[in-house]
Length: 270
Image 1 (cartoon, rainbow, N blue to C red):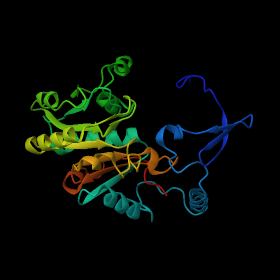
Image 2: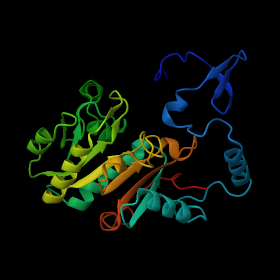
Image 3: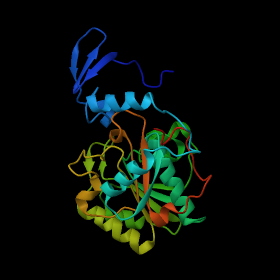
């Protein structure tokens, strides 16, 4: 399908920060696969781990556990540093955001399903993550999208507060807007959003799919402002090219999901 247009290059090999096309031409990779390969191509330690795991166990489904899930979840909980939480593994950033948006609805209950996000934001292309994305031109071909989403001016705390009608139950923000133009959130803005969420009982989701995993100098971009998330989504750099995403939620929020509320056949596999 002509979903991505005609690729300008065909790459056949990578090493560190370099890519090689079919003609043998070397290219410096400043794109990192859209913020994914932060550790470079063909990293020896990653190659060794992938080869070893492929020769041991590759898939068990989500009906069973494997030896890597708990240690990785514990590590993510420690890196987020926002108290005790739980992790739901996914396969991509869009999946992680879709799970987070469903979690808002389940936790808040009927009548508080609304979600506020920012103009120029990007949260994915599944129907609900697309509805959260603050780019109306991306919405039009797929209308009607799930209702309950509203988009406010970035870094404008007063407009954010004005948007909060009684049906709003959650907020999803990037700490640094990526596709929107590399727009960092002001620290005072994030602190103000956190305070308002506390006052109104709203869940604050940080979409760290692009800014997370050390890309801003801290493990997650929201940590620069010293604010506490209720939910964090991540993917891209979390696995350097393997299809891994994750949603973290503080314990009491995570408890809203019960068996059958969400699922993913491949997520969390070895």
